[in-house]
Amino acid sequence: MKILLLGQHGQVSRELQLSLRGQGELIVPGRDKFDLADPAQIRQQVRQLCPDLIVNAAAYTAVDQAESEPELAFAINATAPGVLAEEAASLGVPLIHYSSDYVFDGRKPAPYAEDDAPNPLNVYGRSKLAGEQAIEAVGAAHLILRTSWVYSLHGSNFLLTMQRLLQERASLSVVADQVGAPTWAGSIASATSQLVERWRHGRGGPWGLYHLSTQGEVSWFGFASAIAEQLRAQGKATATLQPIPSSGYPTPARRPLNSRLDCTRLQRDWHIQLSDWHSALLECLHSPPHR
Image 1 (cartoon, rainbow, N blue to C red):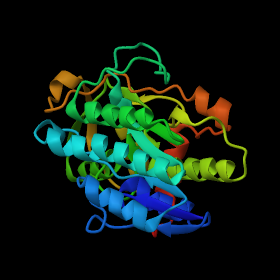
Image 2: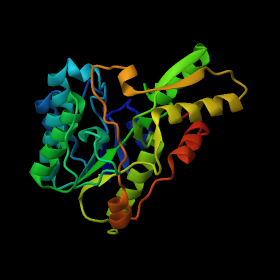
Image 3: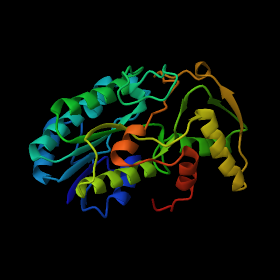
Image 4: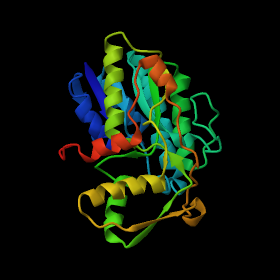
């Protein structure tokens, strides 16, 4: 099987390059050959490569920067997924695409289910929602996996930022009124590999939209506290953490206060469930450095 994996250097893609390598021939083009802001190039490359499966782990993820670059965010997060879906449909192959908890406004008091009405608060969220809608409009075989608070040992993310700041500063203020489930990119990649395996062997569930995040919930402050605890266990000094409300840390893009996702549908239809967020954090921190 030939798998086209997009997002060469992204957090999720880097983990997918490990988890999917036993599933078939992996083709992981760089941005120089596969520019998601160029629909014509997307079509040309997909038709030339003729894959058996497309996995789109590429995205515009600079949430705050998207407020000043909406055209680019929509080109990569909305237009490109629609083009990929069209090309997948013409080849008769499935598309796996990743979306975000930021399609919701965070006002619901309980975890969000797939059929809850989206209402994004920022450009990034609107662009990710538009990408979902573009894929669904094509009507071909697809999995859209909404996840939340993605981190890894690579790239730019909350885990790496906190590890650095906790050791550089004496005190650190972290938002405590936004709640979600930090999800390790390695967990996402492992679940994706299981989904592909089930599909290949005829044991998959229905195509469509699913939520995929770790179990449990925590605030950004709580997540930072868990990161600090692991640093202290290594004998490293850490900053004193102070909880603050979102209003105390204004950003260009508004964030939802509730980012919790109900992942019951994925467990029911595909028999896949991630571990709790704290166990996944420990697994990430103790994963081999070559990841």
